[in-house]
Length: 76
Image 1 (spheres, rainbow, N blue to C red):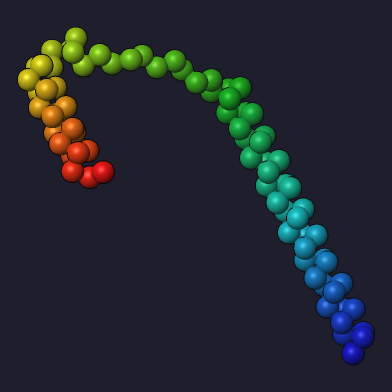
Image 2: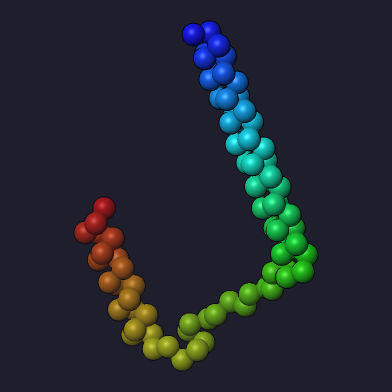
């Protein structure tokens, strides 16, 4: 019985070691890919879109604002 228990514990530690090593390799691969993407494909600065200067009617903006306010007041 003790031989069977020692084999079970040995197998448990072997499995835990394999899973741990796999997770360490996974974290390393993710960090490497992140580094490579940031180096070769840097993030481009985004430009802000101004809705009021684009010809959007002020009545439409007022209607959307009123609808959002009404929704928020009903669903608190």
